[in-house]
Structure formats: C-alpha cells, structure tokens
Length: 188
Image (cartoon, rainbow, N blue to C red):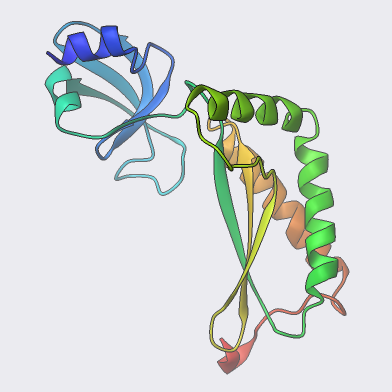
C-alpha cells in the first residue's frame, strides 16, 4: 500500500530531500517494499550535515507517519538565526545591515525563490500569504533581546549559507560596537 501511495501520490522521488517521522535525508533508492535515504542530521550530528548512514524505511511507514518533501514544490526552507543583544542595541541599524548581508549572499537566488513560492501558493490555493524574504523578530528574554532573522535557503546548501551569513553578521556586529551590544556577565 505504501508503494501505491509513493507512485500515485508522487510523494517523493530519488534525489528528493524528505523527512518521514523522525528520519530525514535524501532519497537514494525506492522499490515496492522500501525506501532508502542518505541520512541528514540524525542522532550523531546536530546540524543538517550528512551523518554517513543509509537508512532503510519500509514503505508501509508512510501510511502512519507524516512525510515532508523539502525539494518538491517550494525547494527552499526558511531558517532562523538568533542573536542575544541588549536593549541598548540600535535595532533599526542592525536590521538594515543584516538585510544587506543576506541580500548580498542570496541576491542571485531570491527571485527564483519568490517565483517558486508564489507558484506553490497558487497551486494550493493559499490566499493572503505574501512572500517575505527576510523577517525579523525581537523577543524580550529577561535582561536582553533575542534578535532573530529568518530567511529562505536551499536545504542542500543550508549549513553552508547559514554559517556564512552568521559569520558576516558577527563581523558586522563587531565592526559597530557603539551600535550593537551583547549581554555580558550576570545580565545573561
């Protein structure tokens, strides 16, 4: 029955990045009885890097577990990158600079991401869901603010892009110590 679900429902195909229940990875082989995935993350790594394991999932599992396909309709995921900053931080300045950094890193991809997102919204008849390429959240967390920036990335490049953008943001923060303040000592 799981094989019928995969083939007729076009749930995934070889090369897709999926999650079935708690298992996440790239589909490397499908047959009527089972699906093999090259695991991403898992119990041995905290990031979205390959673990090196190939996991065999019985196709019947698809009938009882949620299935997510990260590469089918909108082949991008939105990621959060948090920073703890003090209330004295110049947040309008930080938002503008962070937005420049992300646009510089993703400039060649943002229009394609927008197009794929808007196509999926039309396909699934989702209304009132505008495309937001970069979003900021400021969350009070005691004596500091959790500054979160959310942006879309290709899941296959996620760990590289997030690391590069985080490094760029931290360099910018350190370049402007009068505008960006980090909590220190007991204030944290």
